[in-house]
Image 1 (cartoon, helix red, strand yellow):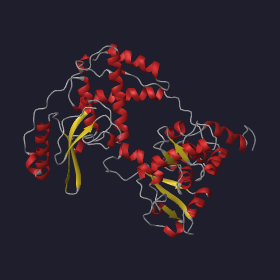
Image 2: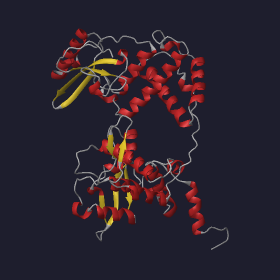
Image 3: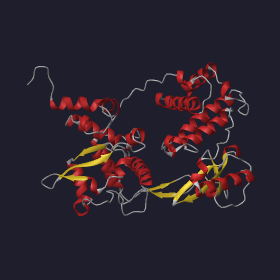
Image 4: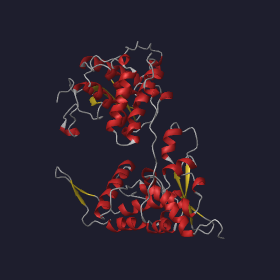
Length: 425
């Protein structure tokens, strides 16, 4: 694999904009990046006042990149001096492939003023760019030269053919819509943030209707899953021979906590003993969680009070908290799950998700549900047994909850169980 010219220089790296890896020393060290040269950029990385500062350098020439790096370093050392420095005239980018790379930089907040920056996960950025690369590949397959294809060459005919292509290749409406939304955001970026005088072709596309049919996990299936969680026969063997133990001492506790709180996995993994609230008699009244998905979308700049979720206490949740010795750690800043382990919450979330899938298969259960269905199961039970689901803050609105999380079949079964008649008392 060919990479940009590189000589060791303090703060200088080469990053692949396709996979985000630093590749200046050895590709094998960084898990085998195989992406082409035109996806690479020089990158400056420094520490200023204890904070990591980075900047993607514009030049692809080594000497010019070094000059940019030194300017950036001086800017960090003298931030006020550089405020009054006249801005360079921006070179107008017109090629579609260059516009996509520019969009990628914007998503990563590269050279974006602080007041316009938005936090985005690496997963979101990666998948968004993959949808745009898919569109580029479609153009290439239809004999368009990407080295000449400009953003001004887009038209309704091309967009219409791509829409038909998505119709043929996307099995689910949600997949079709994810592709379309990425292109809509890209088009809006060019028009609203970069001032391109181009029609909003993708804005004319109507999203497909997504028929929601939430399902929940049967009680017996969940019990079988829990019984399968042990350190016996817990090794995954990958095709390349790698072995991974899917069991940890906290695996079952973590999966049960997701089930009994109804929170998303990442929200569950950050619950602490200090989030437990007792009543006047000293019994567990509820836990206080945070709707992280809402926070990222509507409170990303932390200008509002966090959206809290009041998690009711079930018999199962109280039993779990007793196993976790909540009375011993009550009020402390310790995580309920894996606090004593050197593991990030993000890694823990992924680990628990993978373990759930492994032990579901080990229990011989079908693959039509994942750990995410634990939330649907909890909210369905809460809805059918109490009717108080709207007031606890699990979703932004009752409509979102009813459409996306409530298993209608289970609602019918519960109605039948308690008895329903037009005239019966």
